[in-house]
Length: 287
Length: 166
Image (cartoon, rainbow over all chains, first blue to last red; front, top):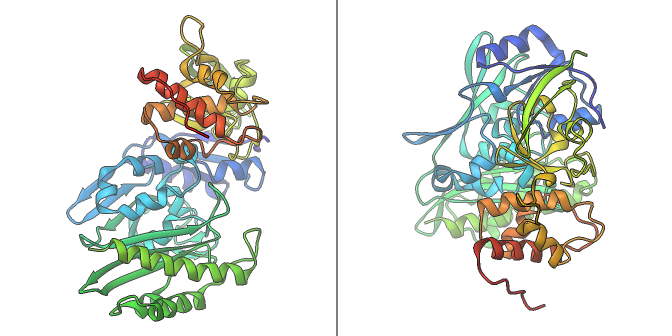
């Protein structure tokens, strides 16, 4: 399979990259790791006339701790996330989720920026960004701006990115020391997108849930923050009844597509189970 | 479409060629360089048959453009044997442990296992299985591939290889 012809551009700065994207218009696409876009191009489901490869852009890579925030450059790969002690220590849920993305080869190329900015409901990182309250840095020819992850996703492949804008980094507030976390992902096989997945970040105090955030992957056309589900467990000991309430509240907002991963009813059913399991595992890890 | 001049180092040799931007790296390796040991299986980033080593990473060469490999250092299966032409530890492992049947996945398996052993010199069975989870084999059931990689790890580490009891 050979993609349709295109022109290749390799800018060296963010300013040059966004200028190219703005000048070339909607026939141009930014190229990050390429492991979503290139397969689509080979299938001719995407036929951009221009690719603006971000691999040559300085300053888009790296993981930086700044006080109680961690900033990750958009071109940082999943493999680099997995190799980072900073991520393992302060944002272990990213480590857990990155290990469940695709396979080792894809993780050497696939980037956090591509994962969060593509708008594919099957991508795993967006749900984590919702639970963690991440902020995205976006750059266009008009300059830089920030967007909350919770305001970013508008529909399948539709995000708050304006034409010509690129996402350059994500900034994540470090959760409290001793927080519990879990990313539960049901998939048919290694490398698959989630049939259903749930991310949980919580803190416990005196045996009760003190704070909790829950988000869902691939159970709607966008990642979902399950605020009512989280509310259902705060102040509880995470007993069976509270867990059931949370799963029910999460299921109430799910609207997955029926596809090869199963019919709607099944995906909602297992979505509830992912929420329950993630809550239990997160609580067991909280100190 | 205008062609671009690319240069890279493949198996220790400087190579060059003219490519269209859309030329996939695997096509450049197989057709321009005539190194046909790197196989094309699914062409959809699933099977891992086209895995090569590029700048210290295992990459599916069907999912990267040749222009993106400008200046890169690449190893393919043709570059895996020892300098004197004898089989490398991994190649020997696949031979001794019957780590292949039809052989189609083998170049990708060996290149992936090569990088895995660079990163984890003494992997557990679980680490090997997760490490090759991006490579599909439809013959062996993986059992002997795991053993082949264990054999190679033992040989590289200078310890005796003991086959786990079945």
